[in-house]
Image (cartoon, rainbow, N blue to C red; front, side, top):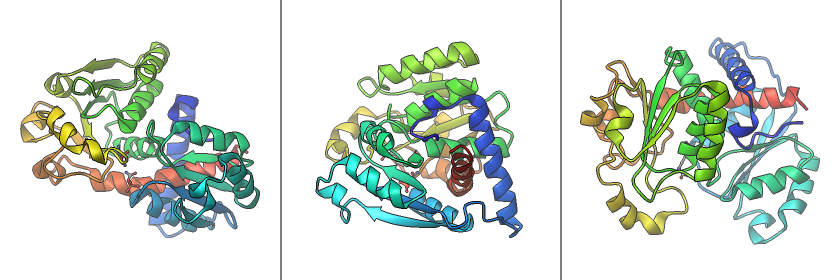
Length: 306
Ligand code: CP
Ligand code: NVA
């Protein structure tokens, strides 16, 4: 049985297999001929943080696969009142076929998965957001931007950046990361990415200069400067990230056919300008919809591998 806690645990072949499956299911759903691949199965979704896309995509995805999803907010279940993770894991996994968790510490996901009898999916932690990267890469595949991509990530060295590092270093493409000083990625994650890059041939560049990162890039991406749980640092972060906005000027340095991606929610006019978000190069809503299709591929793949 496999869990999906970080792309670190997955090979290039496995990532592509999941995405091909997701694309196949997407075609069927669009043609209204989908097969209930997870008929009568139940997905428990534990949320310790807010969500729009993750909740809707997993819930609708499970429905479209012939199964059912349960929304379990931290405020309503005993986990939020201190019931041990290992007890919650044993109970929930004795009744459900799969579990998705959105939480703070990656270690909580790891602990849950150690006691779970069923596959556990990371629906975002402070360290990683791997399901988002499945959707991002699916979007790149659909518009041919998976052919020798040069990706540029500008902004905070956060869960999204870490996941881009894992994706690029596993799949073997070029990724340039530009963060302000003091907001760099976790050095342990960068070290892992550099190790994977030796095998895959990925080229990873870490810089503090957004222009250097974006010059000639074919995929430009960013994320909020204030992730969930960092609300109190807002004023300080807004100051530190000055000059890191992805606007038309910065986007103008990218390849002329570059696409723009953002996992959303976006703070319009903060990390990205309105013009870029709503511009012709932006594929943010295709990317958001692909959460649904990529995650269906993932759930079916995990079911096959148990
Ligand atoms: N991108 C993403 O995970 O969005 P939500 O926080 O709305 O789930
Ligand atoms: N980095 C953001 C991603 C939101 C989908 C956060 O963790 O809040």
